[in-house]
Length: 189
Image (cartoon, rainbow, N blue to C red; front, side):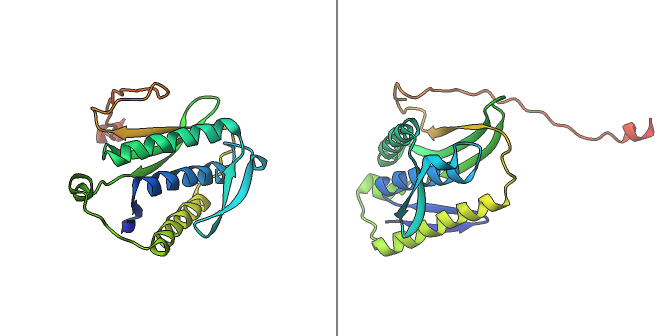
């Protein structure tokens, strides 16, 4: 089962854990290839997936990272414990975040809790994935070029009670707020 929901500029893929985690692996490869500066173009090979030409990394370290990532995402998806996945592209020199690609996850609790099956044809699922991959590709054309060497990381937002695999780093973030505003008195000085 998979469906596409367009809300503002968001498209959400709903489907089985295997479909969604596999999709994220291909989407991550697409973003890493198309956002020059992360990995050299020549380290990707063309394959056909979802009826589209896709580029997959041939770098063994990145392939292993993405394989481990998608396996873990699948586990969290099956248990309904994953809310969001974010692919972050950062400056290699400063670690400044340059881009955040957010993928929101919505769990169908009826399927999870009651085992209710939702049926969609493979053809319909493929059309929906194609639409999302095209949206990613078209979004990239509007972004500024990354003119410096970059690295990437993936953040997974899960339920608090989820055990973090030892190969992952658990980060707890503190968020500070700052409000800036213009004071009319400044104009008079």
